[in-house]
Length: 136
Image 1 (cartoon, rainbow, N blue to C red):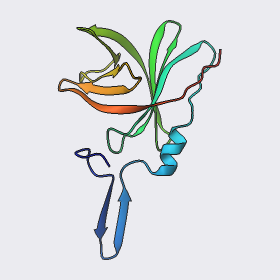
Image 2: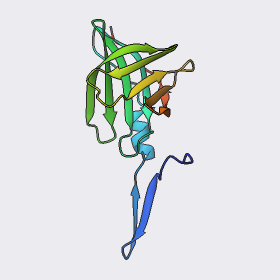
Image 3: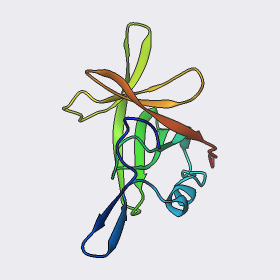
């Protein structure tokens, strides 16, 4: 568990021991870590395992299709979001944000290939890079 990242699990005696896993289990992390593949005409930019927000963990894949940028996030319960994104620069930093984002959240891919979550406070959540494959 990372310091200051919140609890991975909770326990309570009600009156017997109750354990609730908040983060990804080993099985869920393994399932989400499988390489992402996309369809014809789609090119993967990268795929990452996002464990930064408890309860919202999942695999993020950024890909291009017909010169448009998209982000798909598959959650541990197999539900998913698929959003069109835009790329823009702030100073020397290239950022990616969901096209319809109203909160100011964004993502940055660093020189080592990690994907970072960011907001008005700056970068706060590092996502682990996964191996990806494209089908053309």
